[in-house]
Image 1: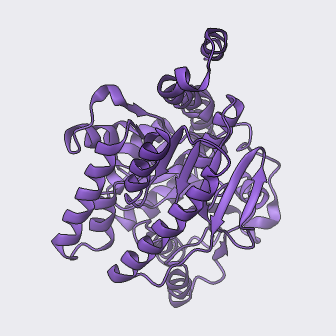
Image 2 (image 1 turned 180 degrees about the vertical axis):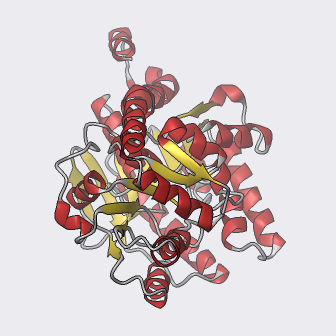
Length: 407
């Protein structure tokens, strides 16, 4: 099994790593091609999964630089995919987006090895472009629609992260319903769970609000900063601190915004931090912030951060987005989309109501354990491959019956 990822290194990409572990536990041999993280080796074997990594190339945030980055990533990915194939036949190739550029690799491996091609649809790239470049050339948007359609048309099966994405693949991209399966990006509740709080992380304040996630132009971390400004300077709440964990294209701009707003003493920006730090902060915090603004992408996207807050029994403050409500349910309070002042007021109201916070946190944790956890999604994910590959991979009827019994 070969899994292709461009957006994040593995195992930092939690969804893909959970997929790798699920396939490995089911008896598949798994190889991953992805960019390197900091200090990553070019080749490694981690928990039985072979990792082939290339040095990332990100020349900037302009539209032209994206083309250069994706061309480089495609060539590096294709080369390392061929290196992985030297160890034996590749039965299936799974391409994870963004971007939607790897379907030619699926075609090539289908011709070379008879490989099945699976598309794991993480993001709507046309909507991502609209959200990042609302005044960008329409030709680029049309090209992204073409690449998305070609990827879906090439795939033997399409996996989507939620029902909104599945509807797009069926209605816009012509996917047959029987070759489309929703596998949500559920957290692992055994790994993501509350630990003992660390009072020092509140930095002398009574309450703490936290953010964990990517910091790109479409992620709304600038809104979280504006919310902190309203809470501190307009509502006069000097007892609430903020910790923002993560990195991305906008990190330096956000740091400058924090200092411009005079929030150095109230907002800590940690950059990327180890899992142990994330667990400590989220176990100490009172509220998780999901500041994703309403735009063509965010309204129909599932936010991993929201479910991570829920796994740590944190109530969520978010804008009223379609898929955010699907994920959080009663664990969230929802501001009018993109209304900074309303989000700030809801945050303060929730900080001041400890009983409500605890009830919402407990509801979120219970929802993760009973419905959203990866263990519930893994069965659907594994079934996609067993249905596609069972007769090829398991050569005897006893093998097939044994594999089906595990489902």
